[in-house]
Image (cartoon, rainbow, N blue to C red; front, side):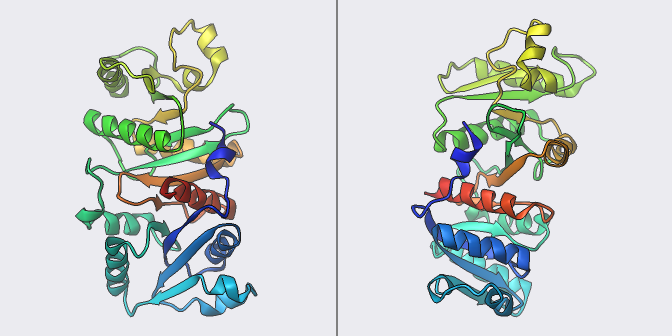
Length: 298
């Protein structure tokens, strides 16, 4: 599936969006633009009043009426109020503002009622890489540090369910390693073999899983042909599962800094979409992430 299809904004996108600590110009510019091209309402949770920064954008009264400022005297009070509003359905989507990712994740994980039926969260980043022929998903780059085989299995399920909700007709997941064959001294290759065998025991017309795959074999059909790799996944992956957060983090930053990729990022597995971007992400990447979350919501 093409990236523009995933993040295309429209007036049909609705919902009440909770943003924690949207108290800087960059984040508020995301809010203003999203209000202009969708039909969302935005709830800004903060300990500082962002009214003056909002006024600097000189937006019309109609848009201002869709911005709701929820001020608290402390972070503890702020998180309590946001938790209550998420639980009651007053807000439908959670977005990280000017705060640490770890703080947002701790907030979500401390509320057991927020977690979906499988009880497992993972981060997914969806990339538009100029030299790749379709959207490339990557997991996990922000939440699960060194996932076990069972946790990797749950990541694959979460990403596949996410892709299905977006309208994918089939999804090819490649499990990354540094080699193409199970190798006793390389744990990622052994895990990949176990995962491939586990998923291949159950035939599916939607999800196809293969591994271990070195990065070039996962994304380059030329490499697949040269190495005579027989796989319905290699060279044409929709998603990549990394063995460790360090690998995911390095790939994420390589794609964006060296590969000039656009990216939209979410946390999967909660009862509501969670938009989780880096503070260093561009305004457009933050917007794309919000639009992707709204598409899941709608």
